[in-house]
Length: 425
Ligand SMILES: [Zn+2]
Image (cartoon, rainbow, N blue to C red):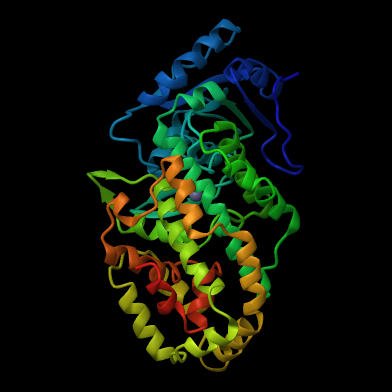
């Protein structure tokens, strides 16, 4: 019997989720029950070794395990989620080992992808409530300079010790809160795509993230709330086989800044902090919809561009050339002529319904700013060192880089994207 387990939705690849104070002490039971006869092999970095790695080794040894010597990545500069590094790690894992990722987002992603390459299970021991990626399938990686999600199974077991999570640096919890906050707008995007018949909401997946969301966001200092919210988000992605339940235009904006190589004071900005700033911007953009009736919106709408005009505009938006295959994605989803006119008509027909749904789903921009500020997360582009033009360029470029239908697509197709973006300047 493994103590302190928390129920996991049926059908997940993740089988065990332990979240408790002192949960590291449950590791021997998890390993004995799930991976009998396997020798633990730990991936960590200098910081997470001190936070939990040493203790994990001590507990394992005291319980009759003979763990391999841990592989410790340097803590400074922070390890990068390079596919090439995962390939190296995969080669290092011995055949009779059960790998354990003791760390936060990057350490976990590196080992998740490495274990996926070897087709073996792994255990996640998170050291901060900083991202929703622990429980998701796929790793957020970089290959040849491009950010990508590498498909691979999620951890078979997660052992999250609240004492460890609470001792993480405060900005990591603030970042996790920012990432969790983005589920507000991610839900808004899905409500829009559903109202337009483009991507219907799947109620089971929706409930998993959205039902407990307001409670989990109600106390940013409560590590258990934040971690549970992030874990639920990861499960929703396992269930839906896509990141739709967890990520909308706010994540696409943060991907744009990442692809542009944005740094602040010589360091990359954390995922949660970029997403927090982008989430406030997307709430404002969605409030453009809430603030205008369908009639007002129709009157303000700019005429649609011809295919050629729009293609020229797309080339200008993507001029920096650092966005991977964005041009192809943008061309593939481009509507023009009669197809655009029909979509526009549909948008204005559903405008009132979308307004009502968003009003119910979102916190107001003022509320959102207050909640994120209280959590210690940034809400203004200057707080993460973005110049205004780079900040404003993001929603325009974000609309082009993925197939996912977001509020930015809706507003572009309605001829209102520029008017909506003007509200965030
Ligand atoms: Zn995220």
